[in-house]
Image (cartoon, rainbow, N blue to C red; front, side, top):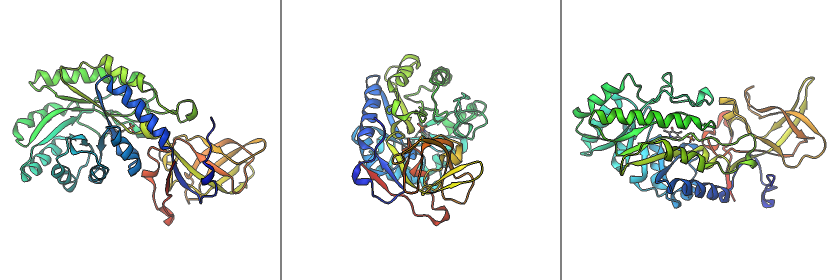
Length: 380
Ligand SMILES: *Cc1c(COP(=O)(O)O)cnc(C)c1O
């Protein structure tokens, strides 16, 4: 079925984000179905979209929370997630953020360096607590995705490199307020080549053996997120193939008896349920190009400008023969372009245009650049 706007929204001022909670529910149920039958825990990466109705739905389906800032930890608690279902990752946690998470007694800190481990030990001591940690390792596995959203290579800032790992592990016996519970990897985002996750499993198995040889059994393996979605043809794949994804971990991860396995999905859970709705302000023709200028721009959806990402653009009200348009926003930046040479029916001022697959890393990255108002969210 092609995308259509609920009729009561047809006259609503644009731009706005539209979230299809029925699709979100179907997606979350499919993920949980595939994960639970394999005894894998799903955490939701709040940074993809932290709107409360979305978080409530995740929590209702007994998904945990993966946070990357103190405010996200706070938001997760506010949305009803229990502290024992919250993990806190991030390469630069501030003292205030660590203190907040310690005071809330969250399940686990994913620690990214020896320096962070020492600070966490000290702050935990001041609160008379022990912090549970998973070491975030940089496994040097290529996610084969855009280089701006690759995180698991030696050149990336994330995680503890293999060269540094022995020294970090040697610190552990000197840190009385730290309890090592597991290891964590997260190698990138929008991963569509599933063989990448197979390679990752083999690396995690090797790393687990390495820890065990040092007398450090791991209660818990967190293999991160990164499962991609179909931006080119969203209607062909509104719900990602969670069976294929989870079956890789079931098949290849060498789990020890009683060991917990976590994944942290963001994009795959929320991308397809969100759509940015806008109107055409002007159609402007130059000698080489026909521009459709929208009332939404990079202030609403920065992904195309930030990492050249593709969003399917549809004109819901245009009629007539297809022509090619450069679809751009109103912001004073040349990168404020959603698509070049996009085939669209003849487009006029006032036409309703949607950018599909905008539920993840869309509204959360909105800015007020040019002093624009933030676009509201509408739920159906
Ligand atoms: C962003 C992030 C995720 C989620 O990534 P997706 O590609 O949206 O699934 C998971 N874990 C960590 C540590 C992250 O930073």
